[in-house]
Image (cartoon, rainbow, N blue to C red; front, side):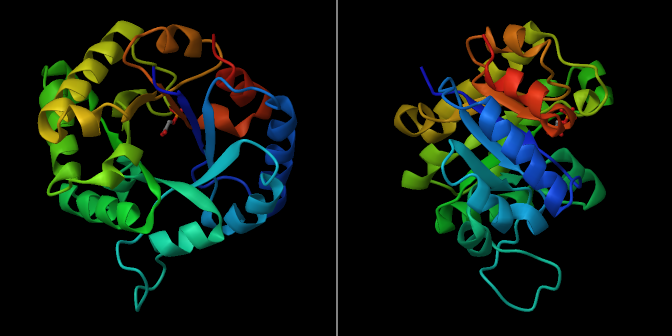
Length: 250
Ligand code: PGA
């Protein structure tokens, strides 16, 4: 049994003070809870400040994105090494909002994954289909292509630190959560793909988490599925009480 991972993706929300208030509340609410690894991904501007506030807690920080180069003339970008230096242990890669609004291709996602592993950050790699693709019964082929693209050329020790996030695009921010059995079917297929492409030893520790309208009132049924190892939570991670309840899933 893998330790579940519950990650909160704050997206482009919260200033420094608001983020600090949220973390201080969350820290208290989940004190002593050891059911899951808890990660939050605040905006870059809050990471360093929050790294001090989480120091005595079990909360860990993630970047929401990174650039694949270590440093250099890439205006507006942040590297894996910088995230690590600022206090992150994780980074989200290939979120559908990055793929859609910032035109991130499979190749870019792969480069970012390589960079994260090189730096010792734990990547959370997102895959997911659109509604049109789901209706055309292309879900499994779309997510498999995305995952294979992300993992292209990768092998070795760093792979064990990868988490895969299955996030159907039609479920993100819409309130339309995937039915637990439908999500389970996709997770199961992704798990098989990991075993096929990486081998059992590398694939075994990889967590596959679900994202897309996860809330306090649907987390328990999602977590009851055998291949759902946690959740990537957007909107509900901005409310300390609700996120704490998600962390304490049953
Ligand atoms: P949501 O976002 O929980 O607000 O649907 C999930 C995500 O984008 O990771």
